[in-house]
Length: 101
Image 1 (cartoon, helix red, strand yellow):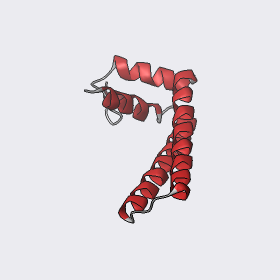
Image 2 (cartoon, rainbow, N blue to C red):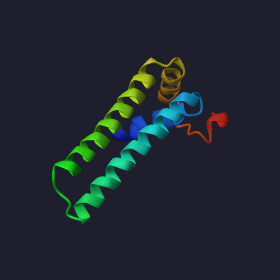
Image 3 (cartoon, helix red, strand yellow):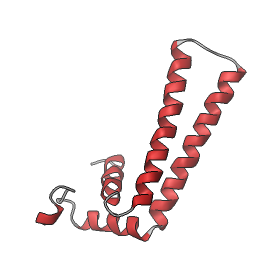
């Protein structure tokens, strides 16, 4: 399992315990999607110039800020830290099988 997968597993586990995490994650995913879609549209339409560059940098900065906020929350929230630790203690237990463990 690579680091990305482990982080995703830890964080999916955190959504069970922390509603704030879920809201921050949704915000982060929307920011990434907006940046990705605008970037892809500019590439496919072969749009260049200072204006599009500024738009893409703004969208990238919004994503970076939302991602940073999410990461800070994950490392400072007692619920998220606890969920991550529980997931490390019981890696064989998924969300669906937690009650069986």
